[in-house]
Image (cartoon, rainbow, N blue to C red; front, side):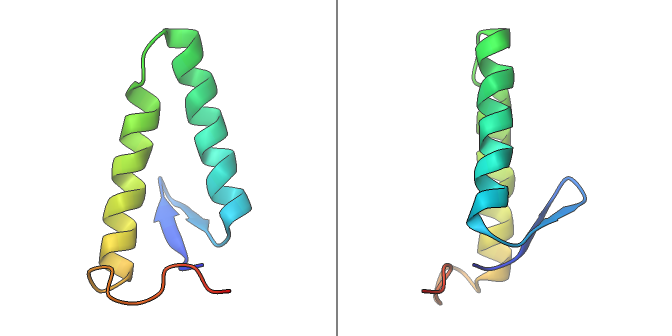
Length: 62
C-alpha cells in the first residue's frame, strides 16, 4: 500500500483507508447526501495520483 496523507493524517494501510470511508459514508447517511464520500474519493485519488507517478506502478503491494 502506498502511504498517503488525508487531512493531515498519514494512511499506511487499507484498513485505515476503509475506516475513513466508513466514517464518510456514516456522515453522508446522516446528512442525506454523498458530499463526504465524494470529497474523500477526490482526496484519495489526488494523493494516489501524486504518489504513484501517474498510476504507472503498483499501488497495493501483495
